[in-house]
Image (cartoon, rainbow, N blue to C red; front, side, top):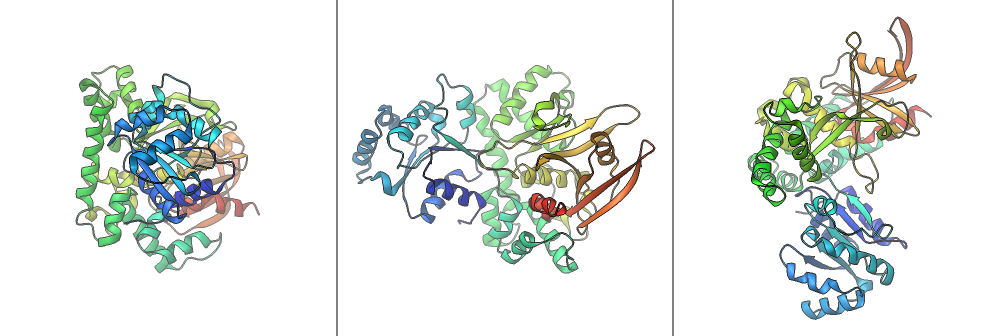
Length: 457
């Protein structure tokens, strides 16, 4: 089953650009890289020439030529096709198997710019890290692909009117209780199904959860089976250990002793970085957040971890549909960490697709005034602090501390309550803090930039 996702539009725009460069799609296994390319070719009515180097490693011989015309001629002979550069898309899949071909991309850019070339690979980041040659800098571009976000999930599961409501919601607009309840129900469904295309497609076709758990558990196993592709037997055991513990450590300051107090942190750190390279987990670093860019003031010793996909988290924790009954409070599901995983996942996709997905948080560890803010994001030259409250209420002391310390006056809360935008005053260190709070339900996380802009009008 094929369904629309926002990245198709970005890839289509790339295809139609006059300054187009060969593009490399980066992302974890099973996020839909190959399907995305096929959908783009279908939408743009381009013939797709797809070369899978995992299935046909011998094709690497054809790409040893530095002449694109010779490469296309040999491909045409091998495939028994008339290949015209202006009417096709050349898709080089599983390119991590033959990373030396990446050098060839520069010749397509320099000598045959009319031919759109796309490369992808499920473990490409490992190949890029271990290259023994320089990449063709300035002659390629990237597109980073993750799971389907919530908006694309609504579209895929036949909820276009609810999607339209979200995209057209304006600050201050009253949301009728039935619509609010329906959207929260969709959020809970997304928590269970997640955003990996295989699970979403099955749910969209069958509209039930009967096989969703089997699909997700199978994906969790297949990710672990992949460890053998980039790690020794001893390393594989450490990867499994961390992989299986991360869902239970969501949103917590990461401590290697919580993984295994008997193993050296340097060894565990290496395994953690491998999972990060495989894009199975995200590392969210602490930043002092005194200015932009936020990454300029990170402390690499202080970080939190989040998983690739919220649906996989639910399965890894052995939660069932019964844990997400209509009347249950989000804060009761794994102490609200599922909601925090969802928000992290959505925020990681609030960027241009050519930008690597990064996210930060802030904390202060003073004994008398400890504070930890779930996330901080850049916005229009400033910094926005974000708190996640799984229920509809909760204190915002850390947000207050951050606003006071950084001399800011606007914060965001994501929760299950109806949206609101209020100006209020609180006491911080016996001083008044005047600030504005934009409170949004979980189904509006993807619209936070647009709604923040509206608060400044």
